[in-house]
Image (tube, rainbow, N blue to C red; front, side, top):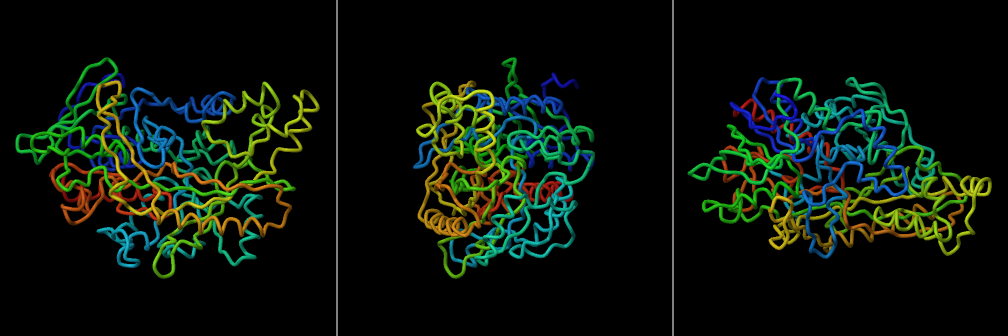
Length: 562
């Protein structure tokens, strides 16, 4: 079939909904094993050859960096009604590859503690699977994504084999923080990155564009469209711009019959399959289940427990930003090279809970930002252009000099560029049933369906952990062997883009949505993949665990089901 043919496929073994890392890895694994697979993706297919153009657009004044991935305000409409406004469309990309098209690329494994919160600390829940169940799939995920790293983090379990590639060397600005941490007795280590430190899997090594978020022009940073293309080469079919609006079950209500989707021409289609894998993310997964209510499932599909949409989790960040009297070399590297899990395993009963430290290489204004941060009218223009993206720079307008041009402006650029720093902590949340995704019946998307509504609240556990993290960040900054010109605290509870927990796994159908193999308790041929199934998320980026659990699911389907 041509890429413009969006009609349903016949004889399908597995229909996968979503082509992010979970969906694309499942599709590739099953297609490689000879199964008939179709993937329905709400967004469009982006051409890799256009990435340099997207990079240039992201750097231009007037461009919100996220806009280069073409968020559709009508298709992607949402609401937020919690204590914290959740900026969903700044976190996700709808398209072949999903949000890995613009992600940061950090890929640490979850430490054992993250699987054992209840048994260790008496809070949250233990996972129904343990680290040992996931470990072989962590290894496979690291090979599939291509991870550069070093076995130097004492707070994670020993590795059975080395990383596929050597770690990136620490940046210059990281070395400033490492020295300060050593003085305080805080251990640091390298960052495992899903980006190539050498040519790998037919993809380029990193060549230093420094625009990793939102776009990597070279292809050195992994994105899930890699496995989408691999899946297609093995016979899978990927249908883009196919918005799944509901899931239909059979007469008995315990098996899915079809995914109903709409295409750009306005046509509605029904994709049938023997099995279905829902892999659309921790907001769209529960939304689609709730939209699929019926007489047999009056509270939403697979929701006899009432847990669909509940236990929404996200990682807040707290940050100390500022400027030093010496160069830090900011913006020359677009990703992290050093971090610390020193505070990851609380002693005794938390809170404070886990947090990890990240040293940022992309803090402060870019050259174009400094050029625009001057007096009227350029200062106002700068503010209008950058306010939505939350630029991590102080308000310099009051102290700005008159507008400069030519050599004067060049001198200012040389003086002010590259002195900024930022160190932040990623904060562990706890699952809370009142943090949830529901349907906003008062607002609809372009198809007439209720939009997702995200209710996200801080909670005492996260607040106390954040305050302890701030104390540590300020101790590190105070220890820097340089003159600190200014610092500022930043709390960002809108989250890191790590939405999780809304279709949690468990052994009790009264308390969870899917079983340890990620099959829905209520629907025998429906599986759910991705971070929405995670009972807890610790303080680590979830993508490697998304990949590992997706590979485990694919192995289960291939070995035990199909």
